[in-house]
Picture: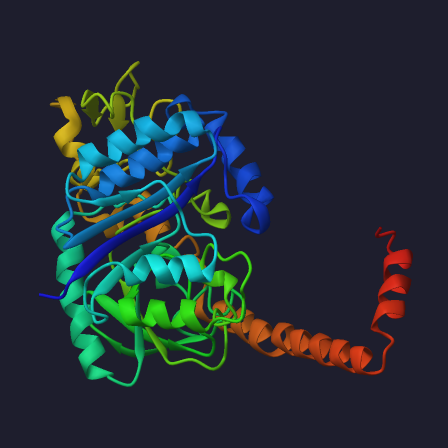
Amino acid sequence: MPVLVLFFDTFIVQGVGDKSGQYKSFANEASLGAIRDAYPKYKWQNKIDVVKYTLASYADIAWDKVVIRFECEDINETESFLEFCRHLFPSAQIRNQRSATAKQYYDALSTLDVDDSAWVFFSPNNDHPYLAKPEKLIEYMQLVEHVSKEYPRNDIGFLFSHFTESMLDNRITDPQWGYFGFKFKKIISENNTAYITASNIAPLDSCQIFRLGYLKKIFSSTMNKGRVIRLEDTEFCSSPDHSVIQICPKIELCRHYDGYFHLMKAIPPLFIPPGFFESDIKLRYGYDEGKEGWINLNPKYKWISLDIDLPILLEDMPNFWKKRISAIDINPNFSIESDRAKLVFYRNFNNPWHNRSKALNLIRSMYIYILLQGWKFARSGLRSLAISAGIFGPLKKIKNKIFGIR
């Protein structure tokens, strides 16, 4: 079995928070507000509770080694968070210091005391809870190891989050092909569990599993000697000069706690159920009306409401909830076709654009590939010419004056 390491290295902001700095998403916050301010179960939570919720979801996975590095913006939270981590992972290497430069990442990764061939669940993100059965990840690691041996000259990335998006950007007739940073993927092989893909630019999103040696190579060779908190902060992310093959699982393993703003009407964000930390979750299944203090699941609905907390089948509840449930009330009069392909929520979950024709997807893809990408290259070329001619600064001032930009 391949060696698997959980490497959780993060800064925990105080308050409810979202991504901060250059990664802050105002569009995501606006979409979230329409849900978290409207539905009590989905209410805003303190960021540290979201981090605890995420770590709790990782606790049942059979890691060979666990490393947790953290700093709390509110230092008064440090000791209680440290105790929480020790309770979840008694054998973990836990340190109240997070990485904020490439050298700090390299030094931390170099102390793992495992071979460079080990696989690292790289998590500078602190808000991607694991929803599937723990054994699923272990099963996928066997596939990852197999693909690595099949392509020995390539570096391998296993995407453990962003499920819906990764299922919809693999073919030119997919609705999201090229949508993310002009990344144009192609399927080099496929089975019933995953897509194995190649891309024109390096797919180095920081929610993947990589070889330890590959991560060390990135952090030891990047030219960025300043702030580095994610792989996206290195010049290797989205580089056309790369050898990364990406594996995308055909089931959802993790989901971003605050969801994906452009998919929010089809796929809600996550929430922390009442009683989770006290192991006192109460579930109702198949009822049309909600009940105070209970989580109501009903898959006949296509989205959430004040009464319906999750429109999913009972067996699809987050797996890590199960040992924290104190009561389940199943409506004896409820019955439903369990074929997910016939349930609206699951159809939207798998493809929010399922009503759009492949021909329209193709037209959209060609627009992105030819026109938008062409305009990007043209702008880059014009910028380089202006810089070489020494007129970039004056032209920028003229543009800013025209558009009223200060």
